[in-house]
Image (cartoon, rainbow, N blue to C red; front, side):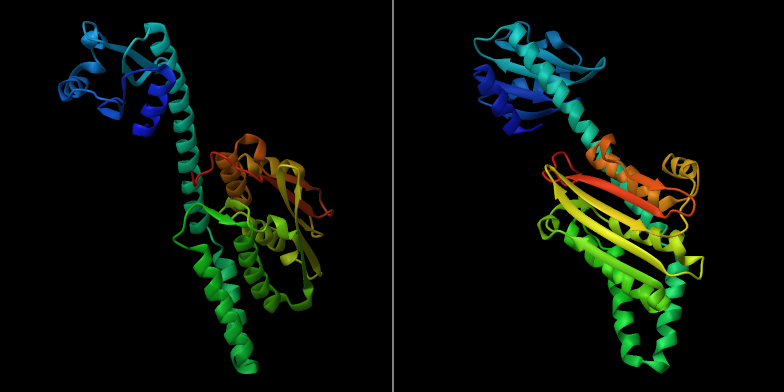
Length: 311
């Protein structure tokens, strides 16, 4: 709430003046409201709705699910019904805002969890690979060290909760370069992404963990060659990203347990939960897999998102 909201609501009602309050103080004012009236709101409005019963102000509580969220206080040639209706609309808006804020907090907390769970196994192997190149190919070792630095810088960047598809793909390329230095020709990575989706926003660190999951669980534990393909394309109002590997696959029932948080697989579950927190439950991950049949993880993003954590 704020003065801008109060102005819009006041004009919509045709009020001479209007004040919005939360549970403690007035937090949005439009038009002339005497200082003593504002002071009275701070002291009594939320506990004594009759405080203005003998004044030119109409008072209506904003109530949602039996909870008092604040009040709408308006002056002018108005009816109690119209002010009460406006308060109802405001209450619904505040409830949506609280839901958006709750989703934002969930996404931020899960991002911190993901950063804390960055695989020490991968870090150890990456550094060991770099050390192995120091004598045999110092220039290659230097390049890989820069890649490793870029990987850490992006993973722990002090930035907002959103990145662009292009930024996420750069992080993927850095990760893959480090892994290819270790596995050589055993890791065949391909990326097919339509340029038009590159500027689109998406939650920070959602694509790279899925590629890492494909490498680690797809073929890292075997001696076979593994192929990982990342596809990205637009389709109507949606952006699609797919990460597919031809590795060992897994039991679909285990995937269900992972996404439900009852089995190991923090990266997969973390990304799924953050996507749902930011965009809504219909935007979670879709995982297609079977033992010996590889794994395909798909995610959808709205191309014109509203109510994301950055708003």
